[in-house]
Amino acid sequence: MTNAAQTSPGPIRRWIARATVRPEPAKRVQFDRPLLPWLFLAPQLAVIFVFFYWPSAQAISSSFYIEDPFGFGATFVGFDNYTDALGSAEYRHIASFTAIFTVLVTAFSLGLGLLLAVKADQVIRARSTYRTAMISVYAIAPPVAGLIGMMLFDQHIGPFVKLAAWFGWEMKVGLNYFDTAFAMILVSVWKQVPYNFIFILSGLQGIPQSVREAALIDCKNGARRFFTAILPLLAPTAFFLLIINITYALFDTFAVIDVMVKDKAANNPITLVYKVYVDGFRGNDIGGSSAQSVILMLVVLVLTLVQFRWLERRVHYG
Amino acid sequence: MNRIRPLDHLILILGTLFMVMPVVVAIMTSTHTAVEIHTGGLQILPGNDGYDTYQTVLTRQGGFTGQVTGARMVMNSLILGLGFAIGKIVLSMAAAYALVYFRFRFATLMFWVIFTTLLLPLEVRIMPSYQVMSQLGLLNSYTGLILPLLASATGTFYFRQFFKSIPDELLEAARIDGAGPVKFFIDVILPLSKTMMAAIFIIMFVYGWNQYLWPMLMTTDERFFTLMRGIKQILQVWVGSQIPDYNEAFALAVLALLPPVLVVVVFQRWFIKGLTESDK
Image (cartoon, rainbow over all chains, first blue to last red):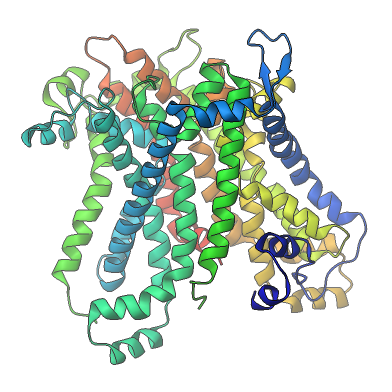
C-alpha cells in the first residue's frame, strides 16, 4: 500500500496497477496443468458470462437506445436516456429519498446491532439464547418481513397504528408518504439488526482475553475503554458491515418496499432500484430503465472503490 | 467480570423482544379465524383454528388457473432453495479449487472476472437479465429460476478463503505420494471441506428460499410459484375484500418463514462459522 503510494501517480492508475499485477500465488506449491483448471472453472465462467456479463453489457447498450414499445426496432439516442433520468425532478426526488433511507437504515441497524452485541458480549448467562433469538429473525425473508410489517401497521388491526393514535398521530401506511417511509425504515432495520449482531458479537468474542485484561488495567472507565481499546479492534468487522449494510439498504430492501407499497408506487416512497423495476416492467421504458441500471452500477462501483480507498487507511487490521 | 448485570440484561431482553415479537405474533395470529383477527386485532396467544387454516392454505387450489396450492409453493421453494444451494457449492468449489491450487495463464484475469460479480447485485440488471432469459426460452422453468442466481461469486469467495487457510504441507505431502489434482481434491480437499460445505449449504439454502424479485419476474405460470411469490399474490387479492383473509396471509407467512428459521436455529454453530469466517 505505502510503496504503491510513493511510486505511482494517480489513484486510478494505482488501482489499475493493483488489479493487473499478478498477486501473490495463493499457495507456495501449485499444480501445473494446462487444461484441468479451465475444466474446473468452466461451469462458473459459463454461468457468469451468460447471466452476468451478457445482461450487464445489454443494459449498457440498450441504455443508449429508445426501444419501440411494440417491438419495432430501436433508435439510437446517445445519452438522452441518461439526461432524461438525471434531469427529471421525480428521479432526483427518489434519489434523495434513497440516500436518506440508506443512511437511516444503515445507521440504525448498525447502531442497534452494536449495542445489543456489546451487551450480549458482557453477559455470560443466556448469551446463546439471545443469539438464537436474533438468528431466527435473520433467516426471515424480506417479503415476509414486509408482510408482517404491513400487518403491524394495518389500518384495522395494526398495533402500531393504535399506539400512534394514542399520541395523536394518525398513521396511514400505504397512503401517507411519511408514514409509509417510517414503516419501511422500521421493517428494514428490524430485518438487518440480527446480521450486524451476529458479526459484531463474533468479532467481540474473537478479541483475546489478554487484550481485554490489559485494557482493564489501563483504563478504569468502561465507556472510554470501549471506545479506545475495543472499538478499534472491531474496525475491520465494522468496515465490512458498513459496505454490506449500504448494499442491503440499496438493493435487498426491494421486497420490503414492493410488499409495503403494494404496486401503488405513485405517491409512496420508493428507492432507485424500485424505480428501475417500475419503469422497465410496468412502464415498458427499456432504454430509460437500462440507463438507470447503469447509473446504479456506477454508484455501486464508485461506492465500493471509495470505501476501500478511504476507509482502508483508518482501519486497524489486528 | 462475572457479576450479574441487570441493566445489560434489561436492554438485551427489550431488544430481543423487539426482534422476536413480530414473529411470535405472526405465528399466533395465524391460528385464529379471520373474523377474530378483524375484530380483536393481532393475537399473542394461540387460537383453535390453526389446523383448518393451514389445511386450507396448503391444499386449496388457488390463483387464476386453479393450479397452485400452498403445498405446491412449498415444494417450489424447496426446489429453489436446494437447487440453488447445491449448484452454488458445486460451481464455487470447483472454481475456487482452480484459482487456489493451479498455476495457469490468465489466472489473475479469471480472478477478477469472477469477483467483479460481487460488485453488482442482480437487482441492478433485472431488466436485461429478464430479456436474456426470454431469448433463451427459460422463463417459467426451474432452470431459469435457479441458474441466474448462481451468477455471483459469494460461494467462490468463501471457498477461496477456506482453501487458502489449508496448510501447504498437505499438498506437498500429497505430491510426494504421487497424487494428482483430481485425487488430491477427492481425497484431501473434500473431506476437509465438510464443515465449510455444510455452512455454505445452510447460508445458500436460506438465500435461495428467500428469493423474491427474480422468481416474481420469472414465473408467470402459477405452477412455478414459490411461497414468496404467493405472498405477493395474496396481497393483490385483498384489494376490495370485506374482511381480508388475515389468517391465511399469516399462515402463508409462517410457512414461508419457518423452514429457513428452523434450519439456521438447528444448525446455528455451522451457520455462524460459515457466515463470520468468510470475511477474513
